[in-house]
Structures are given as structure tokens and as C-alpha cells.
Image 1 (tube, rainbow, N blue to C red):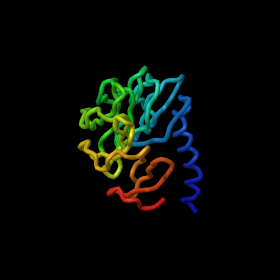
Image 2: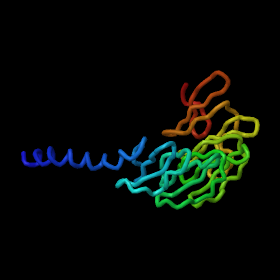
Image 3: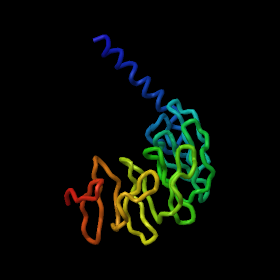
Length: 193
């Protein structure tokens, strides 16, 4: 009973304390990787759990942290930060996708490639579109716009022959070919519709 009474009195105090710094912003996202994306007066930044600003509110857009990194947009270009607030790239990308499996899809001059967590290009800019890695494979589109899957070396594991491919989840991925929607496994076998 004493524990219940203590919780009844402590809970409102903790909730009020947690909300105190959140009131300084127009928008506060969920805390991911110890960081929350915040927005005020149209600018995006990031704060830690205590509400301390780690990445200044000076960006036009931003992605949630994933695997300890987030991309932010400054004017028309994207760059990446780590969770300490250190930039790992310059603002040079036309598009940016969150890190998954240690890599992030980025675009330059209408072509997509992948960077690692040091900001180095590890898969060249040679795809017309790409999405993040899951289960060691990433959906990517060739120059003709057909989708398939690449590995972390940028090698086609499932040749581009689909109109669209989704990310793998639990060993299968949704693909679209013509008007047909079905699921394939990592060996490109149809597992179900």
C-alpha cells in the first residue's frame, strides 16, 4: 500500500518534469536512440532525454534517429549527424534515407548510392532509386526503373525485373510485377500472394 501511495504522489511530479522542456517546442517526436526530433518556428533540431539541445534548431527537415544517426535537410541538401551532434557528412545529398544495417541510401544527381556510418560512399551512385537495407538486402532500381535487390557490396542478388520491391521482413518481401502483387523469399521464389 505504501508503494502505491508513493507512486500516486511521485508520478505526477515526474510527468510534469518530463513535460517542462517539451513546452518549448511546437513539435516533439518520440525519443529514439536517446534523441528526440523537435520543431519550433518551422526549424528542426534534436534534444536529448533531458531536453538539452544537441543539434541546433536550424534545419528545414529531419529524419528520426536510427542506429544512432539522423539526416537533416538544410536548404535543398541533406547531411547526417551522429547522436553526439557531430556531422558525419557535408550537406551534399539530394535525398537521404535512415541508416539500416549500418548503411544509408543517399542520392546525388538523380542517382542513389549508399554511405556507411563514417559518411564514406561504399556503394557507388548507380541506381535510379533505392531504399534501406533489411536482412542484408536493399531494394534498388536500375537505370530502366526496374526493381530488384542488392547486397552490401552493391551486387544484384535478385536481378531487377519488378515494377516495385518492398523491404524484406521475416525472410520475405512484397513485390509488384504488372498488376500482380505477391511475396518472394531471398532466393526470389514466390512464397504467397
